[in-house]
Each structure stands twice: as C-alpha cells, then as structure tokens.
Image (tube, rainbow, N blue to C red; front, top):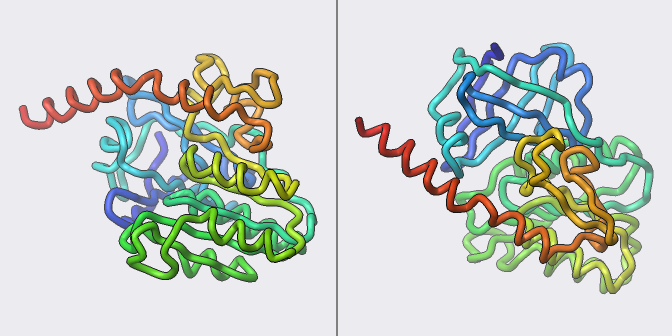
Length: 277
C-alpha cells in the first residue's frame, strides 16, 4: 500500500497528492510518469510525476477530476492509501544545454512542465515559460513556474487574468521577433500541442510534445497508445511520452483518443449511481 502524505486542492477539480514512494523518488526524472491503482479492483491509470523528494521518499502527482478513477481518487486524503504506485515509467525528457528553451503549459499541465523547466534552467538554458488556462480560476503554480523561468508569460482564454488569448499567440510572437529559440516543449491538451507544433514548424524550431493524454495502461501491452510519428508506429507509454511534434500524425491521435468515450461515460454514470445508493 502507498500512503498519501499530503493533499492540496489547487483549484476546483484539480488536486495534488504527495505519496510515500521512496523507490520511485530515488529514480524519478522530468517527463516520467507513474501508474496508480486505487484498490485491487480499480482501473490502472498513468499520471505524470509533478515533483519528488529523494530524501523524504515522496513523489507528488497532480490530477484533474475527469472520469471515474480520478473522481474516486479525489475522495481520498492525507493518511489514506492506494494499492499500487508503479514507476517511474516512460523515457525521461531530454535535458541538455540547448540555449533558449520555451516551455509551454496548457491548463493543469503546468505540473508536468515544472520539473522540466527547472531542470532546463539548472542545465544552463535560458527558459521562457508560457502558461495558459481557460480562466483565472484554473491557474495554479504561477509563482512556482516564475521562479524556475527567466521569463513568464501568462494567458487566459477569456481574458479574466493577465493576457487574453491562447498560448500560441505569444509563442508565435517570440519566434517572429527573431529571437533565437533553440527548442520548444509544449505540454497540455492534445489540440493545444498540435497547434504549438504547427506554430513552430514554419520557423524550423524543434518542438517536443508529451503524449500523456492518449495513454491507458502505461506499459505498452494494451496497444491503445499507438501513434504514428514520422510514419512509424510508436507507443506513447514506452517509446515516449515525448515525441517530435512536427512528426506526430495528429488526426490519427485524435481518432484514437475518442475510442473509449462511450465506455468512460457509462463507467462514470454507473459510479455516480452507486453513490446514491
């Protein structure tokens, strides 16, 4: 069993759980994920590592209440335990001294981009971060991301905070102004990552995306996370989750993401019905 050491409610429906997991904490690297299972009958879901402390033996994950398992997880708190916490899994993000790195985070993906931005800066890169959300009430870790960045740009779709617009707008401006950008890392909803890649492609700037949204079991055995990258079939959970965004077949990825929508809706409705019994 893996004990929850701490729970933080970051914004509505988005939570941070710190788990006691010393073996995972010793080996975790930016960009990797864990697979959790609440109990022996529960679904296995992959969640990207947001932070870790080797001395404390803890690993933190951030998740949004979306389906049955994440809603069930949100009913737990400090002192509770879950059955499985497996990891770290996946290929770590490539951390090198590239020069100037732009880190783009959409929504709660700021939790994923944080350790990457921190590691990039520690490696000697100039880090420009762009943080976007639909509205002000969905923004968290702004100060934390600012501390590990040389520059931070914040956008909200509805203009309720900071700059109104989407993350691709300041990204395009940085590129069009002639700033030497050596690498872009975009993490967030699939549609956001696609358009970040489309924005950078004309400028020839390598753009890394994290295909976490398509993963299911996290081990490559189910085959659900198959993606086409440069015309070659890859598995997001074992070959990634990081890939060259200019090489991803986004249309195929979107089609695969929709495969289990009916089952997910049925599962959630069934769970909600059981709560009322």
